[in-house]
Structure formats: structure tokens, C-alpha cells
Image 1 (cartoon, rainbow, N blue to C red):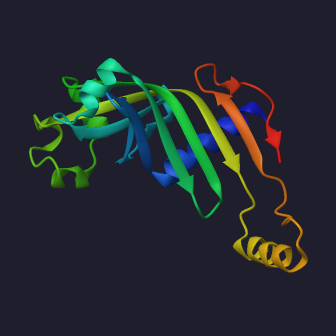
Image 2: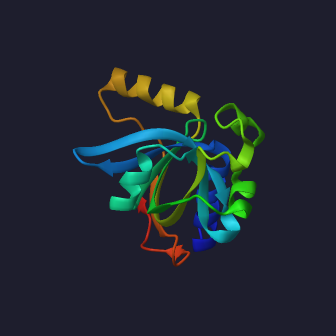
Length: 176
């Protein structure tokens, strides 16, 4: 795959999966919580509506580095995106492009609800593990491996690391 194709694959997974786990630091370690990503590929950022009173706010002020994890189980794709996060409160245009109709469940006041804000993540590095996508082949190979005492032949599993700031491939993919 070319550099451009790797980047397209990463954004395609983000756009397809939608919900990710956001991992942040806090005083005694790290924690993760699910959030729905609103990808803004043209601006190379991920947007999230979130609660203005959430502990994420203080965590991101102290430690802006975050990790987002997306999993596409159907395609056996596992994506980790590291980047820098910030909370934006007073940008009506940003709220409008981030807002989805269903958000009214959490913020009845709409995109300008004082309890809602936008979390902006600027991705820096993405790591993608792509495995074989056929469940039938994987099941057959695992059964064969159990019966014969050998390792399953699941084809090539690729891991690629992409620098999303430069929008170029950081180093050659690992093939397993």
C-alpha cells in the first residue's frame, strides 16, 4: 500500500466504526471511556461532543496527550490513534459541525447547551493492525492447528505506523 492508501484506510476505519475508546491520564493512572467520533478528515482532526463538566476537561489541561482506539471486528482491523486534545467551549461554528441530532438526548439545549462542549483531537500517530478478514478461514485454521499441534496460517497480518501530522508513512509496515 502507498502512504496515501494507508492514510485513507485509517480514516475509513474511523469513519466506519464511529465509537472509540478515549484514553486519558489522571492523578493515579489512565482511564478509558467510549465516545462517538465525528471525523473531520479535511482538517485532520477528530471532533467529539462531550459534557462540559466531565473530568476529561481537567485531565486534558494537565495531560493533553490522548489515545483513541477503534476496532472494526468485521474486517479484523485494530487502530490506535495518539494525539493532542483540547476542549473548546465558545466556538458556535465548531459546535454546529460537531452536533448530531441524537446529541439532544444528553444536551436538551441543543448545540449551544451550556453543559456541552467540543473535544478536539489532533491526531499525531496512528498504528493499524490489519488481519485476515474471513471468520471461516480463521476458524478452520484454528481447528487445524489444534488437531495438528501447529500454528494457524492466518495469512499476513500487517502493522503500519503512520505519522498523521506529516501525512506520510513513518516507517515500513511490519508483516507477521
